[in-house]
Amino acid sequence: MEKDLFKPIKEYFEGFGYVTDGEVCDIDLYMEKGDKSVSVELKQTLDFKAVVQATLRQKVSDTVFIGIFRPKDLFSKSFQNKIYLLKRLGIGLIVVSKRTLDIEIVSEPIVSELSKYQISNKDKRFNLSEEFQRRKIKNNVGGVHRTKLMTEYRENALLVLSSLNDLGGTGKGSDVAKASGVSNATTILRDNFYGWFVKVDKGIYSIGKEGKNALKEYSDTIAKLNSR
Image: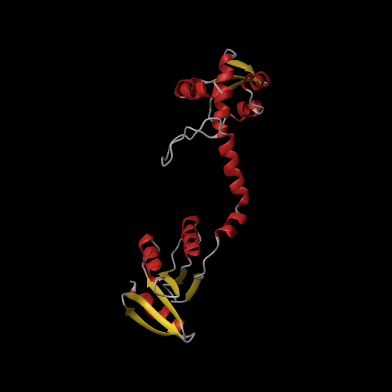
């Protein structure tokens, strides 16, 4: 329960000379040391409600923490994303071991500038722009899941499929590359990522059953790609 977090966190800060008390104007744990004030929101889990309440405490307190029991998924990507949000908001995070009641400050209540993360993720930023720029048509609908997205690779694979179909359904990779304008057409045929192609002989491919289905399924997209 949330009240089980109170004592160990209270004693932790008292060890640093803070004067503490609970439920001060609805703040779970409030403390002062000199002219510095600290508020701690005690929660079962780190969820949106906890973050909202913590940001409201920032209006009246110099420093704000959220205190939770140490989660099993502390180092998972999803939980690390939550910590990233706290760092951007300048909210600290305290985790308490259920077994030993040991305290760990996982994140300090200091605002981390966005530029810091943009610099460390410059490669991802570049790849994002590259993927966007290289897409020939921009037809995807945002907010959908478990849907076949139209990536640059899928667009090129469809051009290869269409060109192979125009060549009679069977052809050399080099001929498909020339007809489609896709320089890595032979690699796409060989890797057969979507299961559309069948290798007939060395360097020669034909359209399989899945490929024929794809020609029908993506007929509108293929038409748009070929019209560019």
